Structure formats: C-alpha cells, structure tokens
Amino acid sequence: MADVNRGNRPLSPHLTIYRPQLNSITSIFVRITGNAMLVSAILVVWWMMAAASGPEYFATIDGLITSFFGDLVMTLSVLGLWYHALGGVRHLIWDTGRGLDVDTSDKMGWGMIIGSVALTFLTLIAI
Figure 1: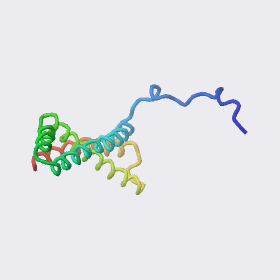
Figure 2: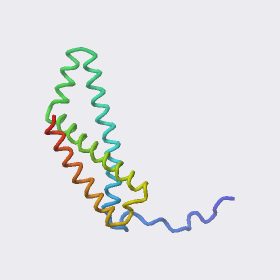
Figure 3: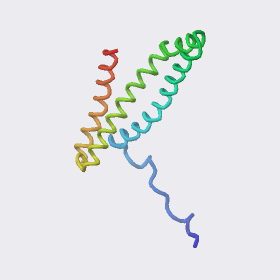
Figure 4: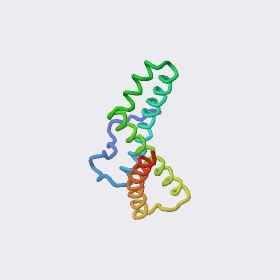
C-alpha cells in the first residue's frame, strides 16, 4: 500500500548541517577525478585519431594538445590519475578491515593528497 504520510516525514540532514571532513572530501574528489580522467582519455583518443586521419588535421589537434592549455589539462590529468590510484589503494586497505579509525583515515587522506602531488612532479620530471 502507498505511504500516505510521505510528505509529512522530515527531510534528511543536508550538507549545510555537517562540517566537511577530510575523509568525505577526499572521497568526493576520487569520484571527480575518475570522471575527469574520462575527459582527458577522450582528448588522447581524439589526438590519436587525428594522427591517423592526416597531417593537416593532426597538426591542428597537436597544436591544441601541446599548447599551454593542453599542457595544463594533461598535467592535471596526471595529478588526477595518481590521486585516483592512491584512492583505490586506500580502499583496498579499507577492504581488509584496516585503517578504518578516524586518525588513520585522516593520515591516509593526507597521504593521498601529498602522494599524488609528489608522484605528479616525479612523473613530469621523468618525461
């Protein structure tokens, strides 16, 4: 039977009630970086398709990808890739039942942030 009191029930607490925590923010950014990497993957596929299409079209797309804007997008994509990968490692650790207390979770969150920036710099130096 349908719930006749549906409109009379209180709403769930909204985001404005709770103070953001490092754990929730890092989790949200893992989802954001996952979606952002899809956009950068489309750019890389577009670049490869342009290379197969011909030299004139490739020169246009290559100019875009190797411009300052393209370099910025690709650098942020590498940062997002490392961040997302470290978030996956953190979840694998959590799946074993370890690191679920607040202090360890916060340390792993900061490890994700600092580690992704450090690994991005190492990747850019290696290129």
